[in-house]
Amino acid sequence: MSETKKTLTVIGGGLAGCEAAWQAAERGISVKLYEMRPEVSTGAHTGGNLAELVCSNSLGSNLKDRASGVLKEELRLAGSLLVDCAETAAVPAGNALAVDRNIFSSEIEKHILSHPNIQLIREEVRQIPADETIVIASGPLSSPAISDEITRLCGTDNLFFFDAIAPIIEYSSIDLNIAYEASRYSKNPDDTGDYINCPFNQEEYEKFVDALINAQRIPLKSFEEMINSGVSAGKMSFFEGCLPVEVLAARSLQALAFGPMRPVGLIDPRTGKRPWAVLQLRQDNLSGSLYNLVGFQTNLLQKEQERVFRMIPGLENAQFVRYGQMHRNTYICAPGILNASLQMINHPSIFFAGQLCGVEGYMGNIAAGLLAGINAARMINGQDLLVLPEEMVSGALFHYIATAEAKHFQPMKANFGILPPISEKIRSKRERYMKYSERALEKAESFFRETL
Ligand SMILES: Cc1cc2nc3c(=O)[nH]c(=O)nc-3n(C[C@H](O)[C@H](O)[C@H](O)COP(=O)(O)OP(=O)(O)OC[C@H]3O[C@@H](n4cnc5c(N)ncnc54)[C@H](O)[C@@H]3O)c2cc1C
Image (cartoon, rainbow, N blue to C red; front, side, top):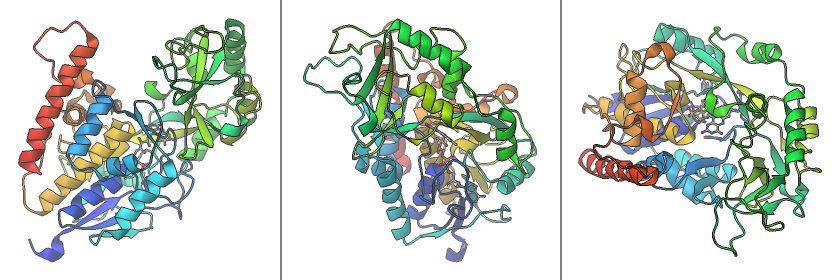
């Protein structure tokens, strides 16, 4: 293949697209990276930053007995640009890797713009170019035009469902005479903790749940019309992992107290007791001036968010800098369309990456970008495509999306349940997870040593 043919088009400058572009460029490929923002907005992103995190600023656990921690380690071993940038932009978050979202984006943009093999083009791609090697990473909010193209290409309807994002408030508006700093299960009395905790007694909790489930929501119809204009209709439902807090609360009175508001390991230093329920606030920017309401993604009207969330002890005067909101989530039905190399079975020069390919979670999306970018480069360079070992968390994810039952397919997040079982019977969950973790990382080390 001549040098001039060594080009790759990447559609979407989000998490997956930036990682894919970087990986291919590092392999000598000349990459055209298309990002439509700020010219065309998605409705959830706020500006033109590459790899903007639209909701939580946490990239999940760093612990080796958690699937997302193992996935992160696999990405480090593979030389992920985005994990590297996340570490540069890290903010305190206990055992998790959370970032200042602006620093994270600008670090990535700096690397992308200075790479001699990457050309960043600020333009909406409305047609998938023929006869080119392409990575499609236009994300859960793919523009209507590209969504229709994807539908045409996949020969099937895209599936749409709804997710929701959580509000962000000003630190200075939190009443620290009520709310207290602590990390869950912290044993160190001097540890001030990485989270701010708003404690509820039973009465406060029950009043709050009642207000929450009876509050006015944004009518689904107008939302649906707003976001689906021009896009083919698809199936609509909530993704279980990202339910609006009011939907979860309506399931049972204790649903929140056993879920996102569970108080375990969060003794209130002023009473020496465990509260009935706790809302946790997580730092959202490096300077610590902003905090997000953990697990409080919502579709309430803005004025209702103010009214109901100010019932939370410690947030009586909360100042909102971003309200929660609902959003569209677009993904293809990967089984039957993609193989585990993230390549289209019927159009081998096209790869999918990110949320669009049916992988859920920031880290999984970055991993998909990494694999799609490497494989697109390998194809252009005349090499065999990589299939990651199933024992790796990333490998298991891509095997899952390629082979799951198409009829009931839903995006999958990194978890140990999709890995091949270990032969030993280990009763302790933690020890079992550590075994999965050790096996995954041994595989990853040897696989990347031999292939990268
Ligand atoms: C509102 C919202 C909240 C979310 N919250 C979380 C969360 O808290 N935690 C989590 O793990 N995941 C969350 N997700 C899922 C999240 O989107 C992904 O984890 C991650 O951002 C997906 O990465 P991606 O690269 O696939 O897509 P994105 O990061 O969205 O990147 C896709 C890019 O493609 C661009 N684009 C779209 N169409 C075109 C086109 N035609 N031409 C050129 N460019 C185009 C978009 O502008 C965007 O920059 C959320 C998603 C949304 C929409």
